[in-house]
Length: 193
Image (cartoon, rainbow, N blue to C red; front, side, top):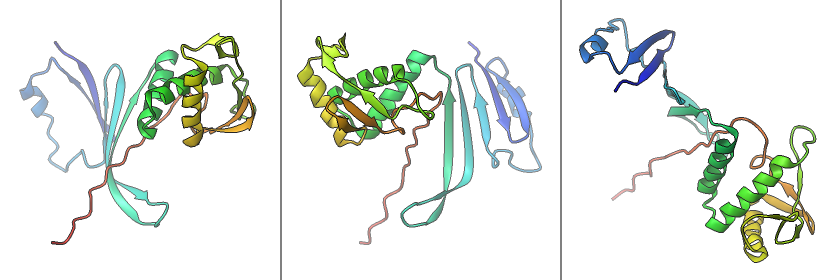
């Protein structure tokens, strides 16, 4: 079983196929220097993964500049899967409860239908009647919906504008075609003995 993979090393591009022997792959010598220091891009059928060394990251609080290793993965999704992955990513970032996630997904679905003004919709209307948002069943009771809605308001996803209208956080509600979730890992400082 061979998977076609393309590896781009700075200005050099080579095709690495699962059908090539290890002996053939090892013959791609680079005696002048390490070609992987500048960064690489590995492309498969479904995703692209980029790596790089010595990217500078500035701490917005302290102004401290630190070097990091960056791994960046890009994957193309259809509309339905994109919204689901976005919702799951936000759930993970905010540690939303199951109810909070279900309500976020229902509101996100409603938001996708809202008219944009200036590149995004700043307000969403969520009237509850006939056991759903705007009369549409969302698979939960009003009490469950309100519990999840309260969680979203507490986490600054929404802010009440009127009894049935809410300001939206444009960073969490958008109609764009790409999103990046950044998770940074830091080593804990060593404690003196």
